[in-house]
Length: 350
Ligand code: PEP
Ligand code: MN
Image 1 (cartoon, helix red, strand yellow):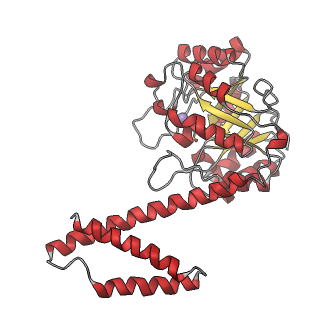
Image 2 (cartoon, rainbow, N blue to C red):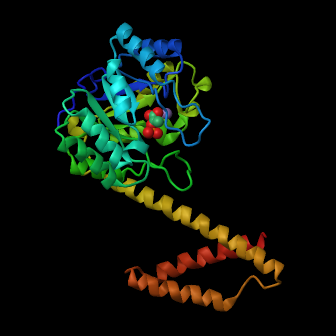
Image 3 (tube, rainbow, N blue to C red):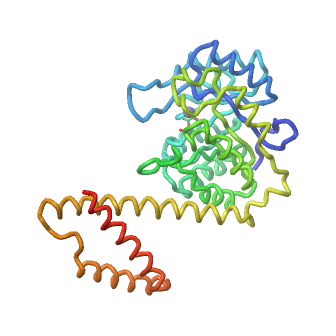
């Protein structure tokens, strides 16, 4: 696998891609590109077509945007990248000399579309960045990468932008770090770039998410950067100014290749634990919601809150389950007692 973007940031051995979520106007595109160039970054990103969850949101400036991106490339000699969601986008973007294309999360999730893009990309030397699919499915991501490789398109890299969950919590898109790690295990030479902007969804999280990705051996970062983030037409909360980008890049600790031992890193195991803990928290919160509903029901039907036979039923059911799952029944008993106690407290608040 040869990833042709040798334009690494300073002497860091890492690829940095920066630019606005969307190219909005010729001035915003050009000014942002120039400031990014001044930071020593070599690759400028800007979306021309924006896949939005709901109609009515800003959907990008399309071909007009490509003209501005192309102009920015001419004036700054930066490499330029944009999102394509089908062969027509690719054809148009090539007309405007775009260097790098990324497949967005919604596109990677659709094997028909990925295949159509791959067919249209055969024989090109441009680089393709494959973002993870929107749902946490390592195989779907691996499958999209395989489609490129099967067509002898080797100038590719993967971009981790997190996964959409039923309810978004702390992160806009849950990182589930074990998934990019699994993809890297399958393709050890594949460059893995982190997109902390879409993972965090908030400016304040960019630095920590970026550092975490570098700590587990990622090869680069794609960071949404806008001259005036608050007035951005898409993803305004997660975009940062070039000045803030400069600060973040100077604070981050980039690892050299020897330090990037993804496989053996304890961080990898801690990530798995963190993601399990999040699931446990979400399930507990769901359980408490149901308890409150039961509380309301008991109240309106004059049923006493504490029902000893139900308590014994819960305890014996879970002690049996603990045995089946090879866990200490005493440990499960103490957890279930704590959960039950909190459930009763929640029901009393109704
Ligand atoms: C983007 O990079 O602006 C974008 C829309 O990405 P994603 O597909 O990750 O949502
Ligand atoms: Mn965006």
